[in-house]
Length: 419
Image (cartoon, rainbow, N blue to C red; front, side, top):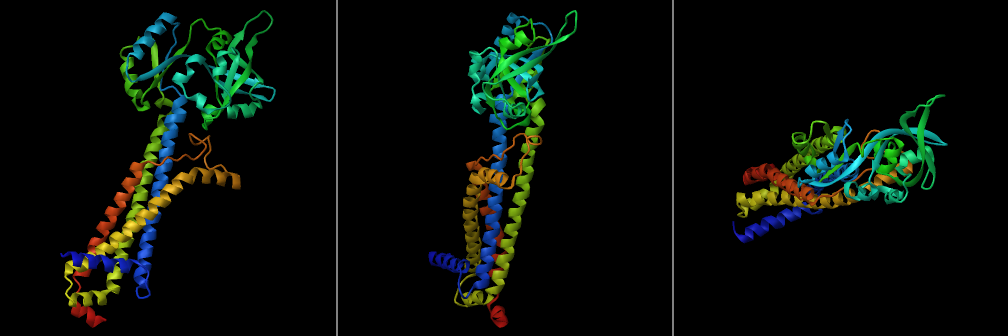
């Protein structure tokens, strides 16, 4: 086909897409097709960004605080044995850091109430290496545990329930009982709140408290240096693989647990939801592409007279076919550009919009008791945007093939007779 014929086909297709007095049906059908594609793309990009946000928050927030692997034992293991285990683990290149831990249960009480909690006794000087909890501290700091032996850091939900803040005193009760001749007495110690964190996860914000490892050893009257060891990896998804390898090399008295035993189902559900929702939204875009097919067929029927005139003027079937392929591609490009812009803007503001709805209507869109986080995160990935744009453009091109062939097969005499 000559360059002139190519330009003519593109010019006529452009006129069909644009709004004109003599082609209102054509312009309306083109607008409907553009709207359908743009809407589908906007929703798909927004939802994928939200699912990416959940994935990021799981990795950086929840899994930044929860140990990727935890080594525990029920035996009375000496410090030398623990150091041997630590040295063996740190030989692996996938391990970023290790840190000792005393993990026990307890009851935290104030004048306003009490709550059973999970107590983590940590080495405050190494907490930055093993955990990102400092990133979520709203008041005070975790580092204050180094100066304040009887200091405590607790979640915001727990602090609200007990009506305490930084500087206030709380009582931490041990599970042990002090036996004396008169009556058994509960063992407890007063702690000063030195930090309050908020992760957005109910399990962490309402049940986890962090104290100095020396304070935990004293309160719970432990004879061992610590009861567990936390392991942080470069990639959290390698936790199960390393766990199975360590089982074969560490002594039998040590038990290794992975983060997947607690949060694995939630993480897998997020990945599965992303796949299923993405598939359903791609079906929505496929429906929009089918709508483009129907629109082009209607446009071909409406323009039978124009096609016949062009054929009588010498236009080849290939030229007629290219006119409608150009039109379909233009609709696809316009719809894709609008959809991508709106999708990126929606993804950028979806978190703020969700927060506005919660405040305006006093509703909780995401409950921390049901979901791993209580806010709507979003993360735009360039790869997702490019994949969606290219996929829609390909569907738009495929949608033009059948209508374009029908237009090219139009017989001039028959079309003019019907006109």
